[in-house]
Length: 220
Image 1 (tube, one colour):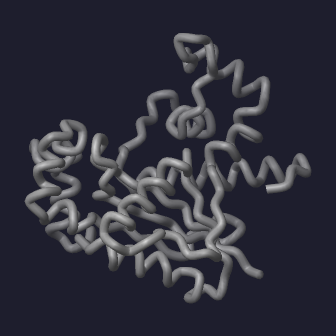
Image 2 (tube, one colour):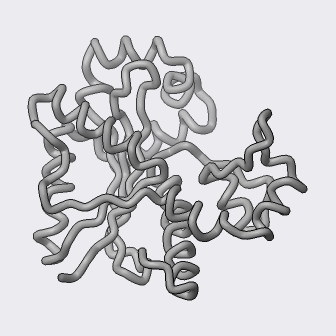
């Protein structure tokens, strides 16, 4: 059966794990983008309870309400109708429709996928919608795929050490930002931490990793 790879990223209110910005890219097996989706969650941004949680979380509130460039970007996207503000139920329905629209097996992909899977399931349950994922959806952790391929080389390890991408315990850092810096050769690259922009770099990481796996005969 044909597969489509849905690279997803969520931005959440840190202490409550409420998803307020979600995006995905639907890609074919070669990494070509078939469609994109990005929305803010109305249940959070337009409810008194959600706004209170946003205000309490400094990282999220700075994105949305302090007049910074990132805040201006979100608000300008919403005002220009480029960023729909949708109920979580409608967002789930949009995700559910992907497999049927492409007559394909959906592969849900995210960097550190366990976080996004738990967040989406917890939010879906909070809104009385049950599990976010249908039984036919399979999952792929882009981080694990990158660890087995891109990061599993002496060249990456040497580059990471040379550029100081190690933890206090001496472990090599393998965040999406670090791996993408290595791939593009730009140590000054910074993730935007907006859902759609992060999906775009994670797509490049995933399909580079799949290319390396294919060349090495690694099943993926």
